[in-house]
Length: 125
Image (cartoon, rainbow, N blue to C red; front, side, top):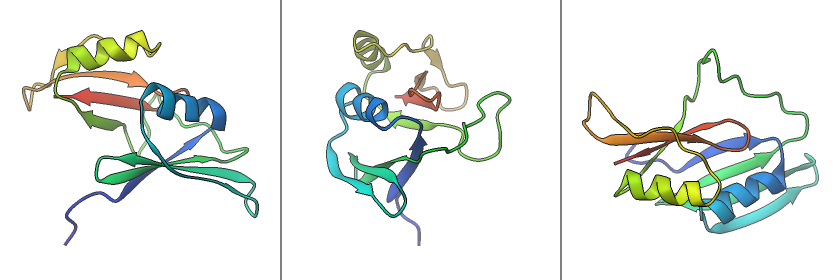
């Protein structure tokens, strides 16, 4: 019935800063970029594997609570071939990563980093 993800949507505080982060630093290709005049916000659609990552810049949206963690989406996890190499490349691009550790349940190596608004993101082998 539900066989794969179509898209993930993120609300950001600063459109240009988010675009620089997701497009220039993380390398997601732009599919569509639209200013929605009726809502006064931006919507940026990025290619994400077989699906899309939707970035919304909505003026006045409240901040996302990170700590203590709240109900809802906890983080985005990206599958990579080599966590060490990918984390090193993110560091070169000015994106700090946490120390690499092993997931005790899957045995895969992983690390976390954050987007400009503090949304946790994971690299996972």
